[in-house]
Image 1 (spheres, rainbow, N blue to C red):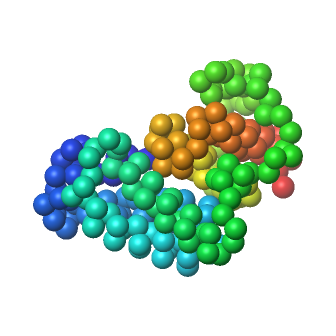
Image 2 (image 1 turned 180 degrees about the vertical axis):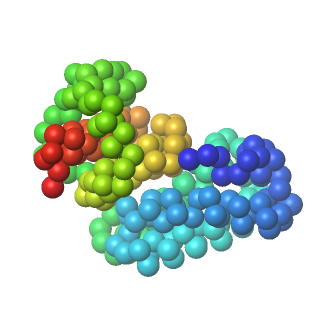
Length: 207
């Protein structure tokens, strides 16, 4: 995902602190959808997630004058959102650590297929050019969307932030309050399941 607006963070913060309504509207437009998805990792319904996001935007308005720039704007907003979502989630059910939203019995994550930096070291089955082009077609995209929706909540959230929205590892760890190691495991598990879905699709075995 591109930055919340075409201006840099320092300029964005200055405009927000000056009460620039257009800057705030642009920020909401760029982040609202991903914040709803992020909130849904902690609360029980989309309606509750929307309420958490609305509370978050109110907190952003109230707190922007105290923003110190020690993180990116979207990391700060994500952290505010997660804190509110955890509070809401605790009222709906017993609060649990974010990483525990992913099942513990999924088995090993095939570490030989990943480098230390989290990239594929042992790539999936090779596809010819026609198959590669098919990834961009609607059926392949729909398959990935279905598989992403079926992932455990923690995996889906991290894959969504990293691979769909383009957040950095540092931003995700800060916003979700997870360690780098836990994030890597969850990201690897989620990516592995999505890659397996693509391999099944291209081999004709998609569900």
